[in-house]
Structure formats: structure tokens, C-alpha cells
Length: 223
Length: 237
Image (tube, rainbow over all chains, first blue to last red; front, top):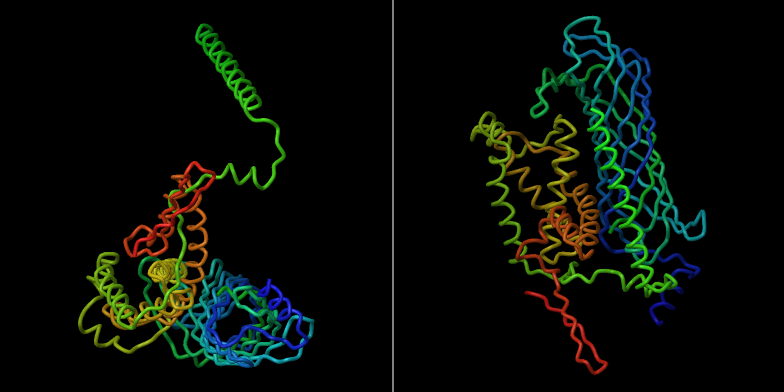
């Protein structure tokens, strides 16, 4: 009974009191909209869905996490040039990014029982494109090949999270993340052998391929 | 042909009659023996099988020596399993020269999703469940799985290829997310009290089969006959 009353008091206290000074693992699902600015200043759009995970430590106002965002989706009319090959095509893409993210948790509650947070951090990512329909204007490119872009950039995030006294109550979060990346290198990879892929060529990206990603994520604190 | 058709027809009719008889007799039997009762929580609970063992997890503190022993054991197993599970890669790409070249390197690998998003996270989930079985809490299990997979990436797998960013993160972190799901599902199945559930629970969570698993409790109900009963919980240490 005593514990019940204490929990009620914590839940309905005027001042927000969320769990703190502990490690946590968060996970959830999300949607992504990306725009790739290709070498010829054209734009390719990608829409995808996926999941996100964050593992880190929460202090009273700050939180530092190692985060990962993974998305799958479709891409249309992608233009690229690599290994002396120019290709235009449509297919599927996979996006995976990692990075530390530092968040500040505000006292401001946009909705009662939910607090607002904002964060930022660097980001390293890899986009893999597997073309299903394509036209190669020069060079050699087969349907077994896939493209990989290694990119570097940064991300900013704003979101809201439930204020709960214990992380075991699985607080829910919703966030919007914006990420901007610039490709470092582009590789053409032969994926005909499922067990062992072979890199055909890797080129330093002098083509100034840039991408901006907007992701809407939702999830819970798992433990 | 007509004869065969008639025989089949008679047989189908006989089977139909037999089925009808069994159904009716079962209904009559259950109606006779079970008075109509309201499906209260108590009556539903009384229909539940009582398992002989209760499976769960215990969280306890560990000494540094104990944790070092666990990490060493997993490290030794990973050295033994790597060439067995990937003999061709180990033979064709593995060398001491590669080991030296790859030492300290960290890259994005371009492996197929099967490896990055299935094999590595599943391996991570089993690492997480191994540490859970040894009494580590969830966060510590993730931490220990992180150390184990990092040791593998930086000192074992580099015999054939450099350490990968995706594997470093996804093995322990996504592995722990999957491990948490497997933990809950396997406990439900193991405590279901039926043989198939136990079998499936052990398949999903093999660490519960071994001697080091600390969460297995034997339930021994006792009834003295004088309106008193007791439940003895037996646990091996």
C-alpha cells in the first residue's frame, strides 16, 4: 500500500520526475524520407520504413546514447557513375547509420506527463542500392551488382517522451530526426555469391553526392 | 470400378457415423461429468497444467574474476567455432598476414543482409541469453555481450576480414532486443507445462538446458492431509 501511494505521488506530482542515472536500451519503428542530390545536381527521392535502437546512459537532464537507424525502401531513377560506368535505374535501398547522440531533456511539458527533448550528434552511414531495372549507358553493370555509399554527416533530433518514475514501465517516445550526409566513397559490389560478396571497385567520391534524411521514429524503453 | 466406388462410399459413410458417435459420446460424457459452471478466473486457473519446474531469471552481482571467466569461456568458444562454421572463408581468406593487416582496422562491411541483420543479431541474442542464464541483469547482459562480440570482431574475425562497424553495434544491441523477445517467449513456453512447449522453449533459448542456468526451480507441492499444504522451491547453485 505504501509503495502504491508513493508511486501515485510520483506519477501525479506537479514536478516532472522521470527515471534517471541508469543505462537503458530503447527500440522502435519509424518512417524515412530521403533526398539524394546526385553528381549531376539531379535529385533522387527515397521512402522507407525501418527500426531504430539506442543504448546509453541517462543523467538527470542529459542523455548520451549510441544510436542506430536502419531503413529499407524503394528508389526510382537513381543516376550514378562509378567504375567508369553510368547507370540509371530503379530498385531497393537499405540505409544503416550509427552515431553517438547527446540529448538534453527539458522541463517543459508540451503535453502533461510528456517531456520534450532535443539532441545532436555525428553520424556515419552506409546506403546500399540494389537496382532491379536499369540502363547502363557505358561500362559493365549486371543485375548481381549493388552500389554502396559510405557517408559522413550529422543529425539533430527533437522529440517527446513519457515521464515515468521507472524505466521498467517502458516509457514511450516519439521523435523527428533530420540527418545530412555527404558520401565519402562509392563502391560497386558483386553480390552474385551470397556467402561472400566481392568489391569490384571503390572510388573516393569526388562527385559530391549529398543526402538529407527526415525520419519519424517511435518506440519504447525496453530495459 | 463400380464395386470399388461402392466400397469407398460405404467406408466414408462408416467413418462419418463413427465420427458422429465419438463426438456425441464425448459431448454427453463431458456434460455428464462437468456441471455447467461460470468461467471464473478460479475455474480457468484450475484447468492450467502445473509444471514440474518453474523457469525464470535471477539477477545477482558478479565478481570481476567471475566475469573474466565468462568472457574467457566465450572467447575460447568463438575461436573454436569460427573455423567450424565458416571453413571455406577461414581456409581461403585467413592468414597471419591478413591478421596483422586487419589488426585495429574498422570498416563498414558490404555483406548481405542475411549476415548483418540475421546471423550476427541471432548470435548476439544467444550471447545475451547466455549471460542472463548466468545471473546477469538485462543491462549487464547487454554489456557483457558487447565486450564478447567486440573481442571477437577485433581479435578473432580479423584472421579473415577487418572488424565491421555494423557487426560491432548490431551483434550486441539488436541481439539484445531479439534476446529480450526470446527470453519472454521461451519462459512462457517453458512454464506452459507441456512437453512441446518445453522443447520449443529450449530450442529458442538453449542456455536454459545447461548446468550454468540459474533460474530453474523445482516445485514440490506437499499436502499433509490435515488441511495444510506447502510448496517447496528447490534450486541448484
